[in-house]
Image (cartoon, rainbow, N blue to C red; front, top):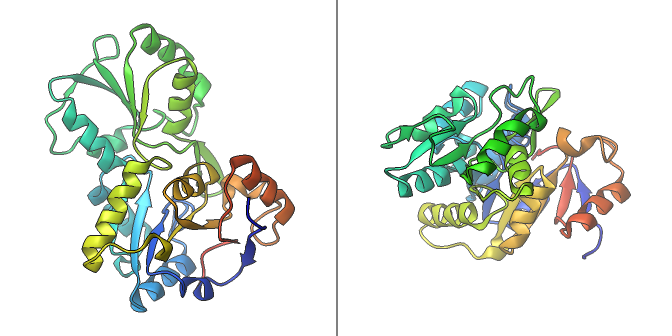
Length: 288
């Protein structure tokens, strides 16, 4: 475990050491309701200096659908070069299972994940496998609401493709459960689960390949910085492939460490130590 990371208020001094950013979206660039203007300005400034920004997200939608969401939230196109989503990885898994019927566990807003694919849908009792993109109603339900459904899935030994490994995200001032919470509960029962997004390697490989295509050459890993607000997904995922990381304190961890503005660095270090990861630096919010 390395020394305690610095708490920084401005990103620009740290940014000088990197050519590519793999930046998380929800919690860093927006909160589900509106864009964070300082973060968007920081990413834009990094690109104006010659850097490349790949938004890497556990959104259970293809990249083109994520773009539409970012447009609606006010995230400018100038802030990023490309988007790589767990939805893109999920689509690849669905394509591998042509001829099999899928049960979709998640809200209807995630249906673009199947757009353009030859997919047969079926109720749970007749499905061959499950794609979990979230809770049907994340405003009212919890993972415990799915206890009976998961037991039925386990009884049939159905395989689950998890389109969003996040456990929780911040929506405005509230925290809501994500597909990762359902997938973890199913895995705890012995169910088979494939996690398509962070912290698992496939989404990072795709992001780095995308950055190489944008720059004309593969960037040295030492010149790539991952930015995110989740210890479990962003920090562990970055560490797993040998990248430095910048940790943004958001709602999912803020209450544990004393808030964004004046965090308890000792408490933060305990969180990092428990996860076995240490970011390069910590910030209350991305700002140039």
